[in-house]
Length: 512
Figure 1 (cartoon, rainbow, N blue to C red):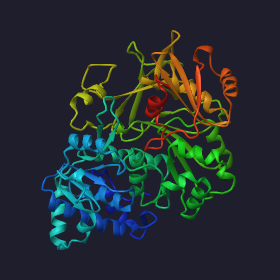
Figure 2: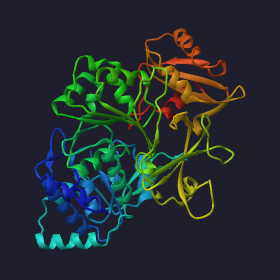
Figure 3: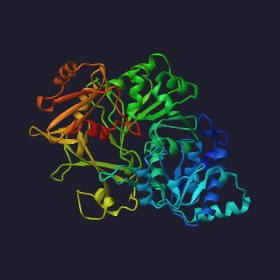
Figure 4: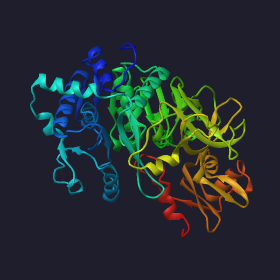
């Protein structure tokens, strides 16, 4: 349902429109707090005014240092209302990494709960969330101040920064604008037909780009976002029971989370009659586990989404429209509306069917670059390599893709996951996918010992090494077979729920 006419230029308009159309609808909910759209709008305005009173400048970064919660979400929009942009920080992050981000960011303030005595933030203005919301302000003055701020904002202003890892160890902060998020939320809503009855089951952390879909599609449609407790992802049956009790109808999870449910056969025990949409991104979705979901919930719409943090979240998508065997990879699909995705060979031309090349994105989802990092920005946000006729900025992903006979892109791995072994160029992701199709393996990851010229397969599951090698021989040529197989009781995952390849390389790499 459309609630406005014409274009919007600020994500706060989503909340204002939803509060007008659905004031009593729940917007955000966790196990301790919930907020309707009418109350959300009141809190956002109050918080925005109080922040503006403390931070005199606009278009400045403000760190949010809070657990994943309703209050964290209110903080994001309150910061936007103050004319600034938010930077969500993982409260469990190592202090050394926090310092690196703060040094790069130099935030105008840090917003949290009882953080005034945190030594980490002693050099910055510390704002207490609860104190700001409890402060009194005359309504007319508040309204006038917020309107002045809004009048000076445009859709090209930053909305948030999300930090990703950097190859040099220095985190990179991707700057994303209101316009990019608005265009993304509009595409998501149209493509998957979300509306005011949708209940999103939020799995990903708010400092991870996948959360952007949940948050902003929710407020765009007057829908509800249900924060699922992290601990439940260790108990798949309880997880599904929780989803059923809270009427979750749409999820956008990393494949690792979906795979846990499939591997534990939780869908055998709990039905999810209200679930309508299952989206996934962030890493390769094992086809065998996806087929288990599809066999239990055949009426659900499934889609594979693909894109990096630097382009808001997603630039390619594939809605599953056919059956796949356990051994077949799921396509990452075709470009989103008003996005251009293309892949280029080493010779600088577009790839043809069956060829592999590096993926580029151009379009309104693409971010503005890296904060306070012009050199890194120049390396990744580059002129369209297909021409020099006019300035045509693109984001160079470092991802390798292949074009199939249907015009769909297939993910082939990262450029930095590509190795040369026995004279062949090999994508480690291809070996991982072959291993992932084996029913006795729950997870698998490959690393490469460069000095020893060895491919190592690390796996979690009940299979013996000879069984795995026998299986792999059906899918891989001899030169791609791993030289060593290492069984682990549990595959390490990083904060975003992905396999922690860096840790695996450290533990089982050259000295493994």
